Length: 463
Image (cartoon, rainbow, N blue to C red; front, side):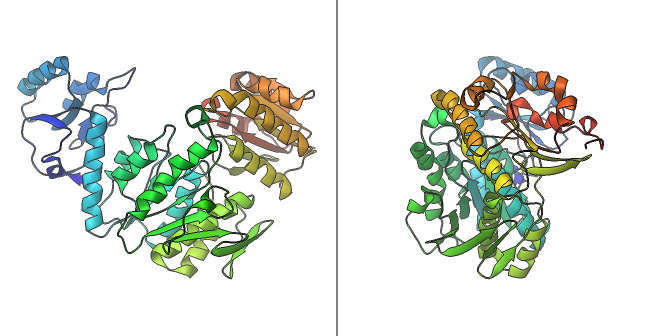
């Protein structure tokens, strides 16, 4: 939430047609969901322009609309002013720059009143970390924590999150994503993080970053931004087992964790992790990587607010959701579902964790691997390499789906099923699942693999 008075003197505004009365409001970008008294921001994309629905929003009582300048739109605004005299129109040079500038003004105002910004980025697990951290902090300060919704972590999502912050919120957890160089720096310049965590450095978005070294340069922009914070709560947490993150310069406000040569020593064994005399044993977490995620979030939350006992209890009750590393019981089947995102490092970590922790069997389980997107020129070879990795783990039952199914097959060899898309797979899915009590499903969001977890395909007739 923000006051319209923040718009005074903004450089991104070309002209305001009408008069804006200072008032507390929120932002809407969807004409279908617009509610009276919100500011409607008409975002123009490649294939759409929300200003097309301007009159629909005005008919709902909109009194403040933000749009990007064009000659045609300016003429329409003149006509709208005659028909809707109570409406004002904020005409910008760029809606994207407008949102960034407004969000930055809001975050500065909120931080001056005592708020703290926590940034999260990394190649894998950003949303999982965000959910874990929110769960921990909310257990102590319920209804006083703002966090990124879903994965709205880009140049529009970060400002939208900031503009939802209430004056009563203590912490804002801002997830920051990037698929082009410089984006984390830009998002950090908007959000001004005081604390945060980089989850890891992996083979993500190689279509644009080309290699892990460039991924590291991009992600460490969050670390650099936190170094500029003057907050008393300034803190940066990182996994010291990551070969890139462990090269970051040490400060008294940074804290590493891991099995060796780290500030906080961790000891993981199947189903639990021990550190600083604390044991976390959560039945909903599978694999070392997820337990290490929780350690990082616990250390960050504890550094922010203390309350060690309450945070320990909260760590035991966290349950993954939103199609991310979910363990589902459907009929007589156990399904591991991660249908939101996939890259080589996250794939390997999930598969290896389930096998090493003996949650899934290499002989009786089915592993369904989907596309890993945005890998650029390395895409085919990385899909082949993952299939080779699975073969080395002695997995016996595997199925590939998506446009890279052939690349998977090239690495696996004979004996695997392959489908070009999820729709074709669904035609045979009920028959396939009747054979296996445990099914691993992971791939990029474009495949919508969550459709494979529909209860209608599962029953109690497995023997």
